[in-house]
Length: 101
Image (tube, rainbow, N blue to C red; front, side, top):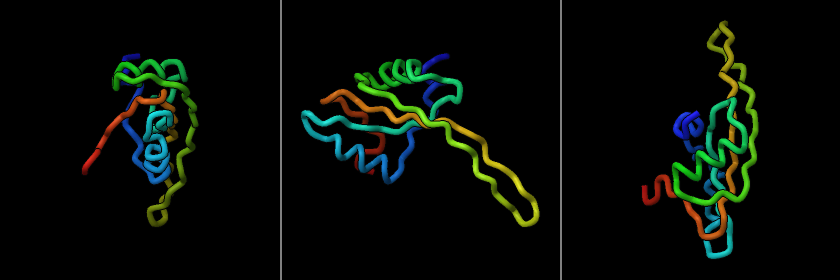
């Protein structure tokens, strides 16, 4: 798989922005969240993030997120399952998505 197919989008959540801010500094490690391809493993996610954002990755953790059951009136449906990757960067590396917005 190509790096653009593995990393689908960044996840901009409150927890993710808090961990990203904790990582600011010389010796601190920034942590960023991504939605990734459901069949991608940790090694593929690491390579894709390093290639796409030109950073060094220290650690990758992955989570399979189950889709929620949702109702629209009397109709019941389910959102798709997806995979989340929590990427910890080496000290001094940083990924900026929407800085100043």
